[in-house]
Length: 317
Image (cartoon, rainbow, N blue to C red; front, side, top):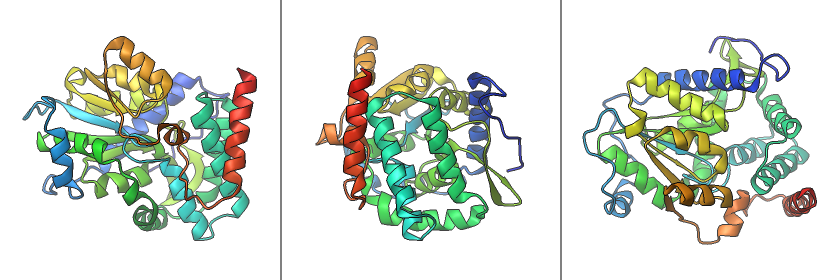
C-alpha cells in the first residue's frame, strides 16, 4: 500500500485517525477478498452447520446482508497478535523480554478494560518496531506457518458455526480486528470467510516502514471500517450482523440490525441485556478466557504480569 503519511495523536483528533484507519482497512479488505469461485467454509464446515441450524437468522439469499466478526476471544481464543508474536519469537525476530512485554500489555488491556493512550501507543510502537524493514510477503508466508502452529486449534466451534450459517445463506463474512490485516486475512482465508478488516501497517515497495495508516483498528475505528466497507459493497447495515466479546466494540455492534454478544465481558453483557441483544457464551472457564492470554505461552513472567495488572486495576478503582 502506498504511503499515506504518519499521523500522530498530536496532529489529528482521534476521530479523524479512526476514519483513516477504517477506510484503509476497508480498502485492504476489498483487495484481499476471496475470489467468487472459491467455495466458502473450507474448514470445519460440517460440524459448524449443525450448531447454527437452530437460528432463523440469517435470511437466505439476502445479498445486501453480511456478517462482521471480531476475532480475539470471539472467533479465536486469545489474541491473534500475541499468537503471532509467539511465532515471531520462535523465529528469533525479537528477544524473550519483548515477548514478556507483549504478555503484560495483553493482560493489562483485557483485565483493565480501558485504553490508556500512553500504554496503547507503547503496545503499537513495540509491534511496529519488530516488523519494520521486513517484507510484507515474508510476514505473510510466516503468518501461514504461525496459524497452523498456534491458531488453528483455538477457533471457537460455536462462533465458527455462526459464521458458517451466514456463508450457507449466501452472505459475505468478514473478520474485523485490531490485528494486522495480513494476519487477519490469513485467518479469514483458512476459515473460508470472505475477507478481513484489520490494522493497516504502512509499506513502501513491499517493505514495512514501521508506521501505521491512521491508528489500530480498535473501538470506533472498527465501526468506521464496517461503515466504509458496507458503503463500498452496497450493504444495508440494518440487515447485517456483528459479533463481538468486548464492550470496546459497542460502536460496531450498534451499527447493525443484528448485534450479537459472544463470550461477552461484563460491560458488554450488561449493555446487551439492556438492549435485548442476543448473547452466546462458548467458554468453559470464563474467568480465564477473559484474560485472553494462552495458557501455553511459555513465558514465566506472564503470571506475574497478570497478577500485577489485576492489582493495579484494583488500586485505580
